[in-house]
Image (cartoon, rainbow over all chains, first blue to last red; front, side):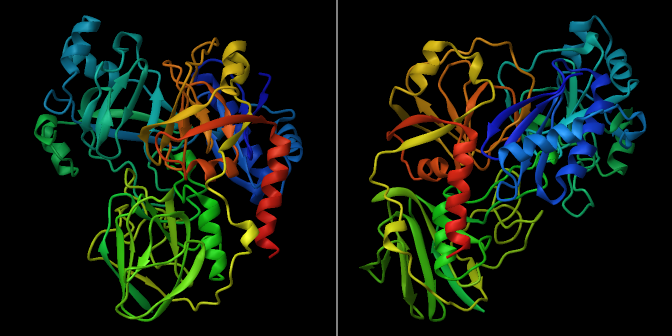
Length: 234
Length: 306
C-alpha cells in the first residue's frame, strides 16, 4: 500500500490508500484515520473516509498546504493495519416482505433463488461499513453475495420510506430518513439509524460491522417499526 | 430580547451561519451561508461573532416587522430593500423603529442578501450549527431544518456596536465574474482540449441551481480516466458528470460522490458565484493551491485584524 496525496480544495487534501473496494482495506483505513486525527489534532476540521480514500479538511489559518502535506506524511509513516481497531458490531432487525421490499421478487428471479433464499443470503453475511454519505447516517455496506448483486433502478423512487433496506450492485444500506432513492428494496428495519440525541449521532460508523436479522411482522411492530406499504407512502 | 415578526417568506429564506463541521464522516452536509463573505461583513458591522446566525434571503420575497426599535445590518445582493416603502441601501446598518416594516422584494443586483441582528439570531445549535438544511431536517429556528415562514418570530439578544464597512472593501457584483479554480483531483484525466476549453470559454449558469450545486452550460468536457469509486467532496468541487456539463458543488452538497472533478473553486470565487443568477456568464481561471491559500488567509486576516 503506497498512499498518494492529491490537492482537492484550498484547505483539503485527499489521501488515496487503495484503488479497489475490498474488505481488507478497512484495518488500514482505520489505522490511517487514527494517526491523522492524532497528528492534526485541533487543526483537523473534518476527516471524510470513503471506500479507498480519506479526505483531510484542515484549518487553513493554522497550516499551509505544505505543512498539511508534511503532517500527512508523518501520520502515514510506517503505517501498519490494526486488526484490533475494528469498530462496533451491530445487528439490524429486518422485516423482509414484498410490501416494504418490492424488489424481493426481482432479486430472487435474477439470481434463480426463492425469496427465502434471498433473505437467508442477505442476512447470513457480516458486512463492513465502508463509508457514510448520501444522507446523515446512510451507511454504505458490503459486500453482498454476487448472486444478489443488481444495478440501481432505472428510475429512482421519489420517496423511499425511512428504514428501507436495499441493495445496489454488491452494496447494501438502510435509508435513515424518507428520501428519494434508486436501490432495490428488500425489507425494512425499525432501527433508528440517525438520532441527534444519541452520542455520535449515527448508529453506524465507518469501520463498524453489521449483520441483518430477519424478524416477522409482529416483532417488527413491537420494535417500533412502521409497516405502511411503500406505495401508500408515495 | 428583541423580536422581528416575519410577514412574508419563501422556501429560499433560511437561517444560516458558517456551517456544520466535525460531522462530515457521518454523511452530514456542511450547510452555511452560500456567500460567506457577505455574511461575514454583516456580522462584522454589528460587532458579532463570525459564526452568529443570519438570515440568507435568496431572490427576495421576505418581509419583517420590528416589535421593538432595533439596529440591523444588510449585505450581499441588492434585493430592492425598503423600510416602510423608503429604499435602504445594502452594505449598511440601519435602524428599524417599532412597527416599521423591512421588505426585500426582488433581485436588482446579485442573488442573496444577508440580514444580521446584534449578537445573531437566536436558534438552537444542532450538531454544532444553526444552519438550515431542509433535506437533512437540521438547523433553523426550531432545529428541524425548516425554512423561515410567515408568522414566525426572529429574536436576538445582543447589543449593537455598529461600525461601517470601509467603502473600498465592498464587493462589486457588477464586475466581471472570473472564478478561480484550484487545479486538482482528477484534472489530469480530462482531455487536453477539455482542459483548454474549461478555462477559455464563457460558461452560462443553468437554471438548475440550488444550495447543493450550480450547473454550468457550455462545451461538453471529456473525462478519459477510469470510472471512480465514491470519495469525499470538498466545498466548491467542480465535478463533471457523463454529460460533460460541470456542476459546482456548494454548501448543501452530498458528502461523498463518484464523478470526476477538475478541482475546486476558491472560497472567494464561491462567494462571487453565489451572487450570480441563472443565465449569467462566468469564466474559470486556473490557480494553484498555494496561491489560493495565501489569498484566502489574507482575506480572513482582514476581518480578524480590523
